[in-house]
Amino acid sequence: MIELDAVSRRYDGGPPALQDVTLSVPRGQALAIVGPSGSGKSTLLNLLAGLDRPSAGTVTVDGVRVHELGEAASAKYRRATIGLVFQFFNLLDDLTVADNVVLPAWLAGVAKAAAQRRAAELLDTLGIARHARAYPGRLSGGERQRVAVARALMNRPALLLADEPTGALDSASGEDVRELLTGLRAEGQTIVLVTHDLRLADAVATRTVELLDGRVVADGTTPTGAAAIGVAP
Ligand code: ADP
Image: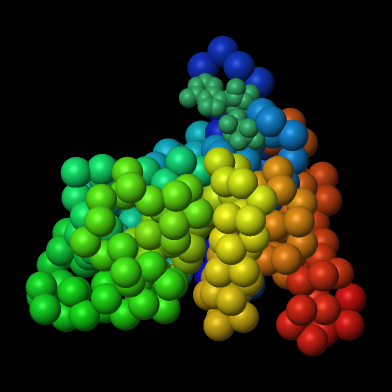
């Protein structure tokens, strides 16, 4: 599903943000990327999302050579292939919850009735149907993150990318999001999760890659993740 081959990303004047990263992620794997601040986690996520280009190496996701995409093609790739969940939700405050969720489908040209049906199903599944007509500003952080996850799932993404999804939440809401992502993992959703939250990584991920100074310094199957899917660690 994901193939990174000898990927480096260098910003002008600084040390490399990523150095020679080679990584292969099969479909259905839930991968956590951990490491201290500045180790290259967001850079890696941005490359997978087609929001940034490597200085060297290749990035292939679901058969798409992401490093070769221009701006329009990468926007289309994101709509078709990627679901994105951010620390601070990134919802549009002047759209209702339902419209936030349906928006990616409209942008992808899905017929309105079908899109609305799918949005309603997702809101129901994620336990936020009663807020469909509310504006995000009226919701708690945990509820907003559920809306953001619903939006991310709207176009049935091959790859769900989550950047510190519990970073702005209290512990109870964080636990909700943890359960939600764990459930998606169990359903076979391919997930790449960047987090400082080791409980989240342990619960959701079946594999953890640690970055330091832009290099992979550890790569292993996580015991909890392995146990959770019934495989001996
Ligand atoms: P993390 O997400 O692990 O905190 P980042 O990927 O954000 O790390 O950053 C890795 C390195 O790249 C850091 O040294 C950071 O300062 C640098 N960096 C990230 N984005 C930029 C940018 N737009 N311009 C210059 N340097 C950047």
